[in-house]
Image (cartoon, rainbow, N blue to C red; front, top):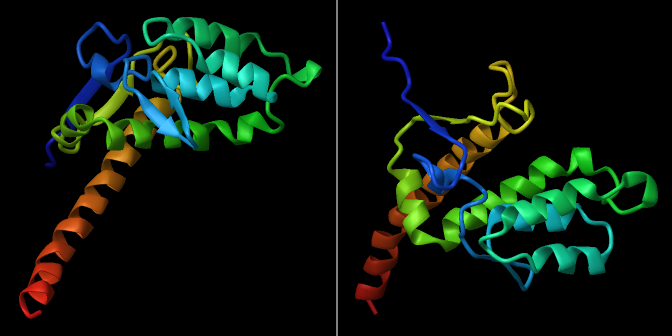
Length: 172
């Protein structure tokens, strides 16, 4: 009988495992713009117009909820939301999470230390990103696990290449 996976529950940045929250201050620079955390990056990308993106991106690190509210207030019928957002949002969140862990070594170390734990975002009100009423899709958890595996693969590839590169340099 196989051992059940460890479940790592997270949601609020100031609660256990809060480091995994996209609201946790974790500066990321993407396409030359620095965002205080993943949530602010994500909400800024939702905006169809540069002015709105810049305004959302300017939210301070300790106010990611302001960015969330601003992003949710954007109206598709007014052309304020990026076209086809529902088909783009997973890719946007994936990129934000990947950059969070690649650009913030302390969070990367925590992520990689989780083994094969299943990540579960305990957002009871959002069945897309979290678990909702228990039957949610938990996309935040799934993307975090995906990013963990991608970073592990990158690190293994780098570690595999390093000895070869060193040997080549020894023969010069």
